[in-house]
Amino acid sequence: MAVPGRQVSVPRSRPGAPLGTAVDQARLGAALTRLAGTPAERLLARPELPAGEALAARGLPARTIDGFLRPLLAALLCDPDLTTSSRCADLALRAFARGRLCLPEGGADALPELLARTLPPGTVHTGVRVTSVSTTSVTTAEHGEIRCRAVLVATGARAAAELLPGLRVPEFHPVTVVHHTTDEPPGTGASLLLDADLGGPVAHTAVVSQVDPTRAPAGRALVSSTVLGRSAGDVDTAVRMHLARLYGVSTARWETLAVHRTVEAVPAMRPPHDLRRPVRLIAGLYVCGDHRDTSTVQGALHSGHRASAAILTDLGAGRSMHVADPVPTVPRAA
Ligand SMILES: Cc1cc2nc3c(=O)[nH]c(=O)nc-3n(C[C@H](O)[C@H](O)[C@H](O)COP(=O)(O)OP(=O)(O)OC[C@H]3O[C@@H](n4cnc5c(N)ncnc54)[C@H](O)[C@@H]3O)c2cc1C
Image (cartoon, rainbow, N blue to C red; front, side, top):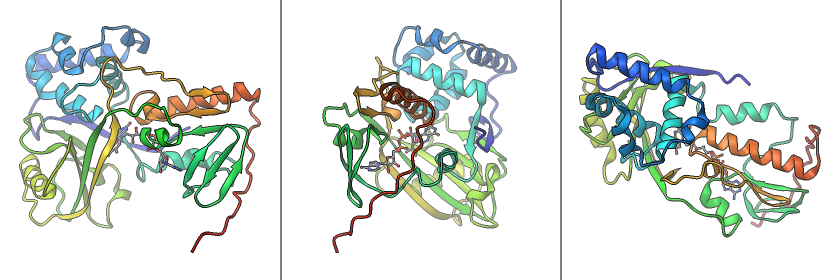
């Protein structure tokens, strides 16, 4: 399926800052090209260390590692301390080297909406809260019990463990995203700025409206900035001050649109990390999500694919599985 996405240019460590000498850049380019062509299985067979330790053994100059690879990996993994498994870090870097960075046009909801549109009308019901599951039924807060032949729990790790007691709940990396608008966009084009100098709370920032204008209020620029780790206190002021230095413009008149703090944003993937956690619990009960694979959209999709394959095998079913039953209506308590 083609997902409309807009590409973000190769990150820069600071406006105008070169990534080391021309030789350094050539070595980095060659290393990324090699990584892009390495089969995933080969990366998964490498020794597994915390990513920060493994970087030192890559044979690249310290300025390339500290000025580019560390902040890039921190951004890709939402892990400022790079405690993530080096195998997962290699996979993330390989995905970057193969496809660069992109944003789904219209926002993060675009991908699930496109997937849902390929199904017969009425197959997907949103806004329904599940309170318990079994191999033959799902109980919902709004529509009572729905009978079924199999249940796939596709929530985040904590909600999955509430519905399926005994499931492991991992540690998480917290992420805060701050959105500003301005009618005077800084002139960085569609680049993602990485802060290699750790000169403030922002790990990376971009003028997102340069990549996808549909995300911004009409006629204004949208600047989205990410703070990794726990953010406390007046994060907006600290972020504005840092952005003023990163973009080299005054941010005093920028308007704050939103500050989203997600404490359990991304499941931690410390070594040893199992990239293929079981998705079939027992016949009739399945689980998928980023906590069963890598902590990314791709990981969530891979685990969903594994789980749906297990369900089809257990049910002995072919491809004609789509049945759009109406969700029963249960009167709400006043
Ligand atoms: C700020 C932020 C930035 C990120 N950036 C990136 C990125 O750039 N690239 C990337 O690959 N990943 C990124 N991620 C991670 C990515 O969003 C997740 O890995 C991915 O969304 C996981 O998908 P999932 O299907 O496992 O879970 P989710 O996307 O969390 O979906 C689970 C769904 O289950 C629903 N649910 C929960 N409980 C119930 C219940 N009881 N009944 C019914 N429904 C329920 C929830 O409402 C939710 O819709 C980011 C995450 C955050 C928070």
